[in-house]
Image 1: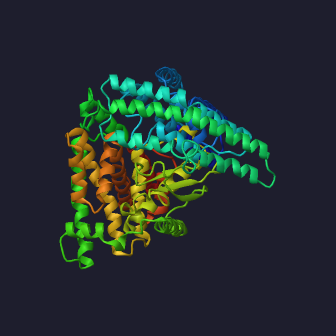
Image 2 (image 1 turned 180 degrees about the vertical axis):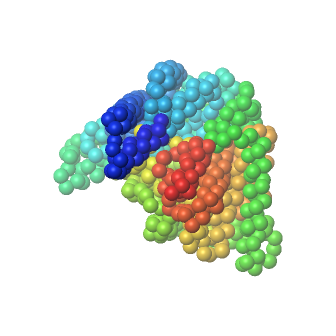
Image 3 (image 1 turned 45 degrees about the vertical axis):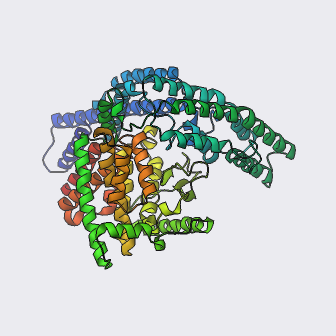
Length: 627
C-alpha cells in the first residue's frame, strides 16, 4: 500500500510536467488529475491514521507491561514503584497471559494493510511475540528460578546495588521498603520452586552448592555478624552517605542516622530470615536432586528443547543440524589456529600449543588487586581505542557512556566470565561491561581484546545503546530483543576489529579465534547435553580437549548450558547469519558496498529475528542496486 502511494504521487508529478507542454489540456483531463490527487491524499491520511493508532497501541502495551513489573521500571531508570518487587505468583502469571490474549485480539483488529512500512514491521514483531507467549505458556515451569547464573536470590541484590539510585530521602526509604518486602517475595519464590518440584523439575545436584553459597554470602558481614559491612549495608551506607556529603545536603545528620538504623533493622529482621528460609528449603531439596543434567529428563523435554532452539536462534534449525554446524566450525577454526601456531614457530601440535597458551604465565595478570586493576585499566584502553576507530565502521554511534567494572564479590564465584548491562532509559546511568576477575587464570591477556570488543565497543554497548536511542520505533522494540541477533552481533564484533587493524599480535589473534572456537563448541555441547544425553563430565571434557581455555571455564560453561538450555547456541548462529548477509551484499554491490551503511542497516531497526533481518538487508541491497 505504501509503494502504491509513492507511485500515485509520482504519477501526479508526471501529469504536472505534461501541463507545461504546448498541447491544450481538456477539462476532463484536469478533473481526472484532481481526482488522482484527492485519492492520494485520502490514502495518505488513511495510512497515517491507522499507523498512529497502531503505534499508540504498541506504546500502551509496553507501558502496561512494565507498570506491572517494578524491577523492570528500576532497570529502565524510572522510580515508580521502587519500593516493591515483581510479583512471582502463579496468579500474576495467569493474569498476564489473559492480558496478552486480550491484547492480541485487539492487535488483530488493526488493519495491517493500512500501515506504513515501519509500523507494519512493529505489528509483525508484536504479533509473533504475543503468539509465541501464548503458545509457550504450557512451558512456564520449564526452568530453574534459582541457579548459579541468575535468579531472585542474586538478582535482587544486583538490582539494589547497581540500579536502585538514591538521590533523595524518598529513594532511601524505598530501598528500605524493598528490604522489608523480601520475606513475602521469597515466599513466592519458594512456592514457584515447589510447583516445579511437583512437576519433577529439580535442578541437578551441582546447582545447589552455588546457590546456597551465594545466598549465604549475602548475609555475611555487618550487621549479620562482626565482619566488614555486608554488600547491602555497604551499598546503602555509601549511597545515603553521598546525600549527606552533597554541598547542598538533602538530608540532616539525624535523618542519615535514622536511615542507617532503619536499613540495619530491615537487614536483620527481614533480609536475614528470608535468606535463611530459602537456604533451608534449598538444602532440603538438594537431597532430592540427581546428576541427570539434560532437559530430556523432563516430561516432553525433547519437545521443549526444540521450541527453545527455535526461539533462541529464530531459525528452523534442528538440534542435529546445529550440532553439525558446531563440529564443522570447530574443525575450521582449528586449522586457522594451526596456521598461527606455525607462524610463531611453536614446536608441537595444536593441542600442545593450546596447553602452552593455557599454562604459560606470560599470558596472565597477577591474581591480586594489582593484577585486577591492571586488567580493568587495559580493557578500558582497548575500548577507548576502538571508539576512536569507530568512524570507519559506523555512521550512527551511541550517546550513552560505557564503564568497565569488576563483578561484585558476592556473586563472582558463580557469575559468568563477562557480561553487559544496558544504560538506563534516559542514558543517565551508563552501560556497564562486567569482567569477572575472581580467578585471573580464567582471564588470559590474549583474550582480553576480543572480550572487550564483544561486551563493549563495537559489541553490546554499540548495539544495545543505539537500540535504546532509536527514534520513531515503539518502546517494545527499543527494550526488547532476540538472543541470536544480540549475541550474534556481539560475536561478529569480536571479528570486525581485525579488519581495522586490531589483533596485530599473533597471540591476540589466537585469542580472538579461541573466543570464536568457544562459541562453536557451544553448539556441539548444548545440543550434546540436551538432545544427545551427554553428561556434565562429557561436556567439560569436550571443552578441555578442543579449546585453550582454563578447565574452570569449561566447568562454568557446561553448567550454564544445563540451566539455560539453547541460550548459548545464539552466538554462533547469529554471527554466521550477519557475516553471510554481509558477504552476500558485498558480492552483489561491489564498489557500491559501504560497510558503515551495512552496519547502519543491521542496527537501525533494533533487534530482529534473523529471517526478518535477512529480508531487510536484501531489500537494502536491492534499493542500492536500483539506484
